[in-house]
Amino acid sequence: MVLPTLLPDWEAGWHRPLLPLGRRVMQHWQQTGDLSAALNACNGPAGVRFVPQERLPEGVAYEQFIYDTRQVPTRSNWHDFFNGLMWLHFPLTKLRLNALQGEELARLGGVGATRGPVRDALTLFDENVALLQAPDALWEALAWKRWDEVFGSLRALWAESRLVLFGHAALEQLVQPFKGITAHVYRVPAQAGSCGDGPDGAVHWDAWLAGALTADHLRSKPFVHLPVLGVPGWWAANAEPDFYRDTSVFRPLRRLPSVLQA
Image 1 (tube, one colour):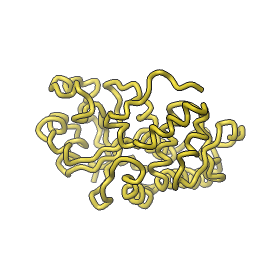
Image 2: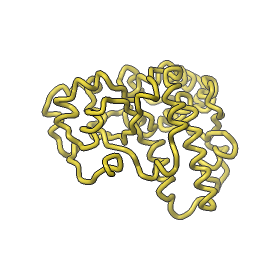
Image 3: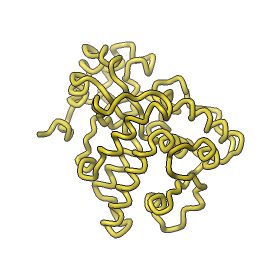
């Protein structure tokens, strides 16, 4: 497979934490046309092997196959590229999410007509979560969708915060960024330590997440919404206050998220 002309912007705030492995995997992928081989060539402590999608037997759930074999079926596309990078950067968290999927599948007796609230929450986390470590004032304003504070009076607090995109579907969307891309934000406390760029920089958050995530906790969907191109420094257009007046993107609070409920 030849990679498309449009490539990730590795200098953008949402993709930069994936350096330098992102570029290395992409170069291997370009050379071989085999994304699973490219990911394996750069693999470290992920605890899994990447295999072509054809290795997934017909009728076997994707999550079940990973749980049983520690092999990740991989297509040569951007979606699975970013999924693979998350396995390389957050291996313990990805294994934990997969273990919870496997336990839920066992409890349900396999794949049913519906996924159920736990599997839905696990999939949402895997596909669309952004991890945020931020001062209390900024987190509270974000949870209440007080956008004039989040991006106005409290704007300077973003410099004291760390936001890392974990969801591989969100990362895929950001190859072609558009204003409406919205992530489900999960708060990382200060005691989880810091998080830098690259897999070595993510080890503290990875270890904390792997120990913190439980089925009951995720069932409550402890997330708040964030249109990611509103983050200061991530998109040139958001330097203008009018950027945030688009209520089709920066929507008012309609229902209390679980993080605000007693």
